[in-house]
Every structure is written in structure tokens, then in C-alpha cells.
Length: 133
Image 1 (cartoon, one colour):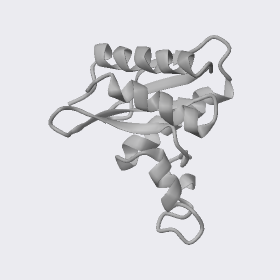
Image 2 (tube, one colour):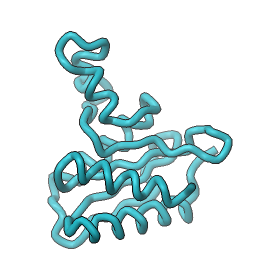
Image 3 (cartoon, helix red, strand yellow):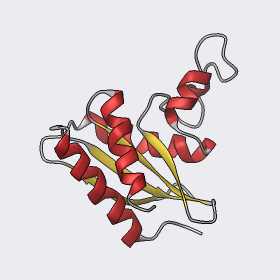
């Protein structure tokens, strides 16, 4: 089961609304369960360097089916996942990536957001995620 294009677009639209509320410009990626890009938005003026980060946050969240912020906590020196960000062609281990589940609790994709503080990245990702609940 994968996120549909219609669902991915709903996620993107809700994330953009939140980014506008926060007065920030974001790059927002939504991938399906197989980590294939399903929808992407780069808000006018958003950082070009954040395109790759948003996509990697989404992939990181899907590869391990957990928020990227959680992975970041576990990947600190002495942590059980220390150094993991060097695997899989490069992961992002700070907030802004979240897995997306369907009503049955199965992972159908992930969202990755980048363009501002990690707190705002996470808030925008969460707003996108909440569009489907």
C-alpha cells in the first residue's frame, strides 16, 4: 500500500499552509512506501540546498519507520545508532522527517521538510502528516 498522489498533494498543501503561518519558506518532499518521490514543492525563495535535505529526511524516516528527530537522538556519540547518518548514501538525523501511516497503521510513505529551524521543519512536517488524519 502506497500513498496516493491525491494524498501526497493534501500533505504538501497542509505543510505549505503551516509554513506560511510560520512565515518561512520550505522545501517539502513526500515519498511512497518504496521511497519513490510522489510529490514535491519548493516554496518561492526556499533554499536550494534544502531540496536534497527534504528528500533525505523523507527517505530516512521511511528507511527506519520513525521520525528523523528520534534517529538523531539515538545517533549521538555513545548512542545505539551512532554513525548511522553515513549509511544508505547519507541520512538526515535531525527533525523534519516523519513516516506516514494509513488508518490500519501501515506505513504508506513519508514526508521530509527543510528550510528553517529544525523546530519549524518538524512543525511543518507534522502539519502535513495531520492532513491525512
